[in-house]
Structures are given as C-alpha cells and as structure tokens.
Image (cartoon, rainbow, N blue to C red):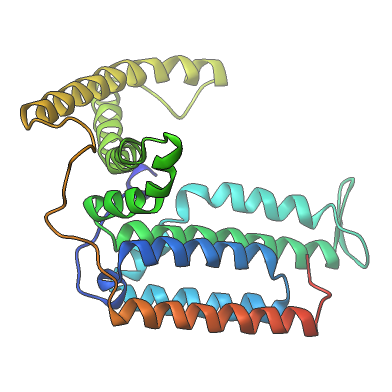
Length: 271
C-alpha cells in the first residue's frame, strides 16, 4: 500500500502541463476545484471528467501511476458511497438487514465519489508536473501580496514545499522499516487491534528519529549555503507567463462560463 502513495512525486517531462507556469497551474487548479463543488449537474460532471482525463493524457505521466494515486484513499471513497447509498430517499433498490439502498442514494453516492476522484486526480497532476523548486517559487509569488501585512510568504512557501517534498521520502523510509521489522518476526496484520497498535511502536520510533535526523541535516545544509530567509533573495530563473499560459487561462474561462450557463439553464442538480 505504501508503494501506491504518490503524493509529492514529480515526473520530469516536456508536456503541455510541464511547460505551463506553476502559478497558472495552481490558480487553474483552484478554479477547477471550485467548479467541481459548485456545479452539480450531470452534464457538468461529464465535462469536468473529460477535461480531467484529457489533462492526464496530456501530462505524459503514466496513466497507471495517476490512477494509483486514488488507491490510498479508496476505502474513504467506498465508505462515502455506502453512506449515501443507504441514507437516500426514494425508490428502494434492495434491503440489507436493517439498511435500505435507494436509487437516489446510488446516484448521489456515485456523483460524490466522482467528485472526490476528480479532486484527487487534478491535485496529483500539480505535483506530477511541477518540480518542488518551481512550486516553491509559485507559492511565494502568490503569497507575496500578504507581505504587506507581515505574512512571511517565502518561509511559508518553503515549509509547505519541503513538507510535500519529503512525503515520498518518509513513505519509502516507513516501508524499509516495516520490512526490516517483519524480517525480525514482527506481525502488523494479525491479532487484536491493541496488539497491532503495540506493534506499530517499533515503526514510529525509528521513523521519528530518521525524520529528525533528516530535518537536522537539511537545516545544516541550508546554513552552510548561507540561507537567511527570503529577504534580498533572487531567482536564477524568473517565472514568466507565456502564450501557453494565456491560452490555458482562456480555455479555463470559457469552460467556467459554459458550466455557469449550463447551471443557469438547468438549476436542479443531482446533489
């Protein structure tokens, strides 16, 4: 399961999404997420689903890897679907003990799970096609207006990016520790809940030690390179909007306007 977690991974490439300015990708992702939660008509979900798969194909990232980003949260998606399936009203589909599945619950559960899947897939595309360095620069640029009120934009962007960057590293470290403990006879899958929680301790202790050691090494490396925060720092490669970014903005604007027209023409949604 740990090998299926793809949060924070970056896949180098030269696709359309790779060439987009990271600020454009973050802003467009924000508007698409808003659209996913605001527009609840079936045709709107169809358009957003087609757009998501088009972006996945255009990214050049292996489709298996992108679909695999859903695996760590599949049980949350399944649980959400079951909650809606057995809590809806209307025509009864079938009865399971004291629970009643309805057609309305089936439809609502499907669209809620589709909403979650689109959210995860679009968010994963951002990290798949944007390097940590560019992501830091983009987040700092977006947060820079807040410097006027004393918000440390550079430090916040740096912390968020470092945290995102080390997610795959910590996952890999956890997997190594688990395999080492299992080779020594540790069992993490059988026994009572209390027994399995007790067996997690031999994983957490070395994992925390390793995390603190990595954090200390990173801090020393940054100090050795005379890092003193964002004041007076310049960038080797300045972020610049290109014609591709303007085209992406125009396409996003057209899409949002079209979805707004559809929502106005058919205000009764499925959720």
